[in-house]
Image (cartoon, rainbow over all chains, first blue to last red; front, top):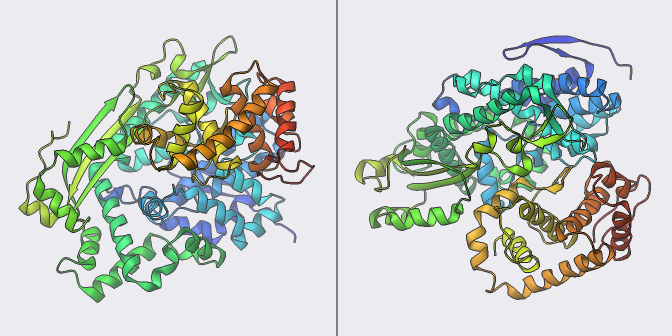
Length: 426
Length: 171
């Protein structure tokens, strides 16, 4: 088949004009990629920040743009073979094609039911390997789909490629921090992307590293990430809506037999192989929700009521919100949760025993930086030093974890029972 | 028993006093997790990525922290017999490798075993020269040591076939 040599530019709110060659255009035209136009990048965060309605589609274009810029330079410097540039570009475009509706919100549900850690990369890999359109397109351009899948999954034989796509300083984060910051208006999440791209290189051991003149840009990157965790990604209200969505999804799968394919990861894989995954987006979920409200009504204590609460922003009330920065070792989430239960009064516990939807405890310990994953800085003498050991760097002084403890109460319950009496949020 | 507790159990038996506050110990536990799941075939459910410091799973890293208390308090309970069996099989591989490279630390030996297996069985494209690829990525690893451990892993069937263009598999 003779390939035309189309070339287009698309205007992106972050990067300006993004140049798309024939390979990129063919991938973007695929149904599974177009689907990303209908998956919000930040899931339900728009309930808090109204502007946060940007999509996985624009984010994927941004990641493509960044890897193109970075890998072309690393190629000129001799770290990446020119032959591998299309491979990296295709991987960047396709890295999020397995995302579920509302992005990360439903991942928790699948993690719980499978008792295994579910990550969207599992499904992105599945799409790359088994979606007929993706396979055909990659093959036409001489790209091995298994190589693309392995980069997305982090198992490519060349560790540098895995690091570019997923590490402390990867092209995914470089895009989403800036994009999410812009759309939420949380300006302290912004980073100096140009400086980062300019100073990112590869050290003698083949690791992604940053030249010392980019030190402040990297420090700012870590701090911006911390602020985004706190102000956006773990915002108490949007997290409450994520928990509500997860709860509704679980109930629906129990009630409606027609949703059988969505009950297991294997079912989702089958959807991919049958070319039906392309329909599974935010719009599809909302459509299902409208239908159920219509059928069941929204009054009373039933699934229709929970859906109404989700769609019309009448969700859980935050009863306790405790955020703590931790500099050393941290107690386990299970232990913290156990203590929270122990400190609660009897009536609250009784309610939770009646139905788990009435009260949700959320505990998470979010790593701010980890020694084993942190970025290396190249000194003037050419040595590669972990950033937290680099003289004068503030990274080693940052907290290691951010601990979040929350209690969410169903609005009905919130009206009649006072919140448990732990300390209020800081 | 929670999955990361198997890793905690083996780590504490092989290296008493192992602690998450030490970077070397955390990396050691990553390699143990990889070997238990990918070589001994225990389904822990982790996705190990391939980085220059060897196989690494972020989810395992988080779980090791999250379940530390629970794991440490549950060693000697119901699961002891199955754990002993896993520990025996693990130790057998470790001891064989250690005898080939007696001057190397436990962490280094497990790093070599896990990395050679990952390069042979779980990276793509499959490595046709795992020893060469390993010593290129990790120049601090002795080539002789890597070659000897690689031969041993093939002999005991942990790494099955290494032929050009043919993917190998784990035992």
